[in-house]
Length: 113
Image 1: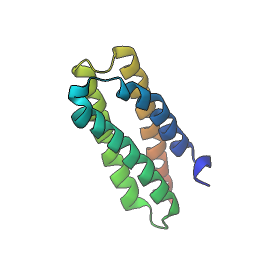
Image 2: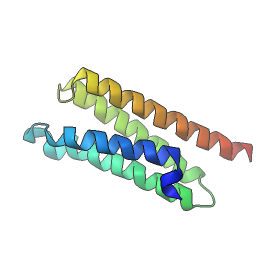
Image 3: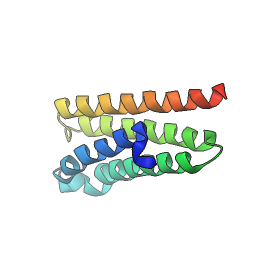
């Protein structure tokens, strides 16, 4: 079941954490940085669910890796624009690193088989 996947739970927890923060960001960035972050995280959750259902997961996990890099960049941009305070950026970065490690483990497990 999807909710039993650790990577799914970590991405979902990140969404729960960041969505209220994004809603408080200035409206000037609502349709640029904020929307891109939301879309990227939702795409990551979608790709995790998709990979979980597929028999050949490699392509989807590759796309997931790319989307995770995109999310990293967007969060860094939000921090550099002073939209995301340093302590929240640090927490988000830690969570993204953890998700990346889980993704790497998932990819390595496929290579072993």
